[in-house]
Length: 261
Image (cartoon, rainbow, N blue to C red; front, side, top):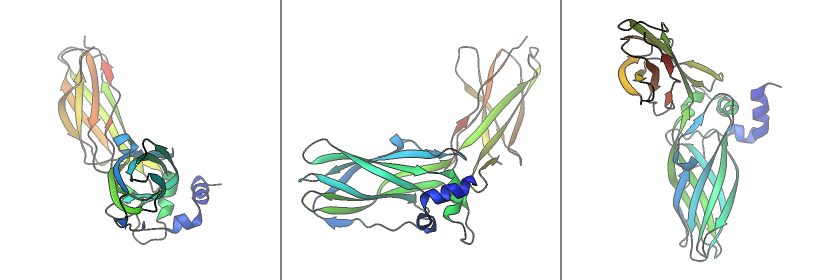
């Protein structure tokens, strides 16, 4: 069975048909509230082209009678409401008579992202990346409940790859060293890595045992390639470093050690 078809079957036809996440409202009854929410430990959620990405939404919830449960949790892109994510379940830990910490396990399968919006005119699976928000409905032992929208913001980003090659190796002192590389990022339409063009990337250098520092910058071409030259002064390692964008992860290549003779 095709991997995408298998993923679609796993999440169910009903879930696949949902194009826009339901809008929650900050309303309810009583004093129960979500007082703190942390997504993925405070880090961006990075999704590639193959591995399923699971992440946690951890909520601190308070009510004078104690917390009963989290009825629902949802997450979706805050600008277009796209949310190809599964809620796998929530567990709660009571920390006092009035407070519980509840953790929802969420999952994004890159093989399902394109199916999520398939059949919709103008659909681009990669538009899922960017700023996301979290909604949740919580209830208390005394019957209080609260439908909370935008209890947290986080970013879902496309995975990226970057490599470095410095040549010749070795190089004579004072000679010209050519440093090349390529920047690519995940495309959730065809589940392949494509060239990331017109991006400014830093060329960094360090001496043995030292720390990397930026020497110059270069811009990726139409195929994602990087190329620049530097004067060979001393032995050391060279690497490219990309700071990322709102939709694409930060990535640093492995250093390429060059001996200067």
